[in-house]
Amino acid sequence: MRIGMALNYSGGFKETVAELGDYEKAGLDIVFVAEAYSFDAVSQMGYIAARTERLEIASGILPIYSRTPALLAMTAAGMDYVSDGRFTLGLGASGPQVIEGFHGVPYTAPLGRTREVIEICRQVWRRERLQYEGRHYTMPLPPGQGTGLGKPLKIINHPVRPRIPIVVAAIGPKNVELAAELAEGWEPIFYLPEKAADVWGASLAAGKARRAPELGGLDVIAQASLAVGDDVAGLLEFGRPMAALYIGGMGAKGKNFYNDLARRYGYEKEAEQIQDLYLEGKKDEAAALVPNELLEKMSLIGSEGFVRDRVQAMKESGVTTLNVSPLGRTHEERVRLIELIKDIAS
Picture 1: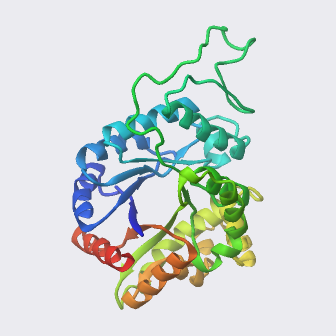
Picture 2 (picture 1 turned 30 degrees about the horizontal axis):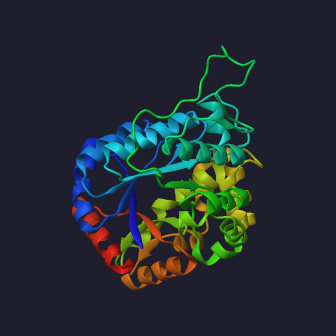
């Protein structure tokens, strides 16, 4: 099981990247850099590539709507080049509030667009002349569109790898099925190992049935906060506002994928109440209703015995990469947590 970590640079980006070398020495395998509607992830990942040696670097995630498919392919090839083959392209659809509100692009056909983006990226990386006719993307532009001067081109540089690993962030049934069919990895959010088979088992099986053998096994990337000790239970509370934000505020009524997931986990009543309160602006009241059981089972916060049991549950459910958020008061404590979880997961 690989150990990953999401980059959190609230204390300063350059300072955080300088500390990545210690995590690398402690056994950290991969770092994920988010984008959302903050600073772009690519410039930050390039900086990380220059300051690390072994650590794999992944976008977590680049939205499929904010860049053309060819630019996503070029960006991934460039990142793979400057990192000496250490890059993973994390893709996702994000959500309509971000895509239409921040990027001004219609949030249409996320499933079909993801499929076509993946196919186009791999065509670019193989250095084929880019000719693609899909429902959502056509290269070159067909007659009657544009100037008519477009021509099939192939990427000038030779990519370090002809197939850069792709991870798809997905929680909806069809999106998960697509990830299992086409991507090297799948990254769900709010992963509950005891419920994974019930919620996603059929989708994963359907996707894997069409999976090309050369893709190998599906890398399943689960996220969890990490704190080990007999007096750390209170740290679960740090996850409460974030869970409430996603379950309650990341989307409108009927268009919140995370609320749907909480319902599929069996928390229908709580999901509805959290959303109602959050959309009314009552964020604290919404957070108070996030089930303790959900926070606990999604985390690695507790005694060493508890954490070992939870890691085992993750493994048995199919997790192959554990993306942790170490909750230590100091950098040294967080490094020790990475060392410990690396040992537990080995």
